[in-house]
Image (cartoon, rainbow, N blue to C red; front, side):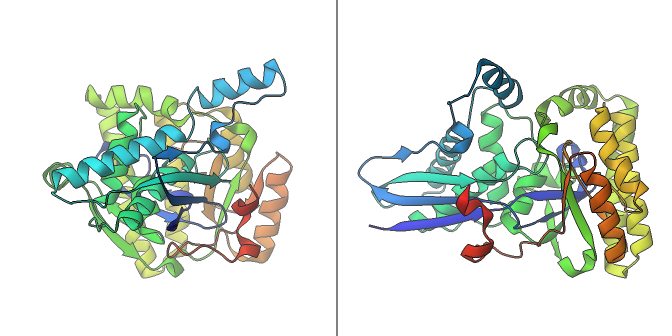
Length: 347
């Protein structure tokens, strides 16, 4: 009985986000300290097995209320089904004949939920990778993120290209979502960069700060679509930050990179409503000497630091407000870490 294993990792939006949803430019990296592990096993009927995100068991009424307020009524199975549907439609549209066999899909995930590390899209991208391997179908790499995005948007999820791109490509990627090019090709321009160019970076997060990312984007999306000048200008500025960041990375200008990271958050704070506890994460990191911005839509931050002493100061300061700080391991491919260092295996 054939068994396929696929994985995807969380991502940090390093520069330019959230302009990926607004025809901008971004730089992101994937890291393998957490992840999604998905298995497909050949079976008589097609089946999707519930995972931890689909949990419907609660210790109290208060826990149920909190869970639904944060995560809604839907879990990971809908993501698996949506990606499968889009994959099968792609094959039909391109005349790809698939073997007549079904699968049982099961996933495990330990990416902290709703703190801006892109756990939902990791489930989607892992499923697409698994389907391609199970049915032995090759889809152009630049098209794969678009299929994941289309699947999620069909579910009504408010999202952009960035997360799916980096979880398909891994490593460190510069992305250009120029509107004319995107509408002509169905995808942006994606450029791999050497992850070593990042230097010393950190991720810090607090699972108790979870917030549904679509809420953060809803008002800005409406203002962008109505062509409000301040939002149009802000998205252009986000894109400019990413473009300058690419140049700074390639030239090894660490001081400029630090300044751009901070500028990215300061611009976001002018455009988006920022919860005070999330703002405090950024300011606490900066007070320790590091640069800081959101890794996504809040709940996790990313930035640069200089030296071991500064990292220890950063770690101590953030721990005092309930945050865990890590030095991320950049995921350069889809290889699972060894069993001893793959924490989701015990999730």
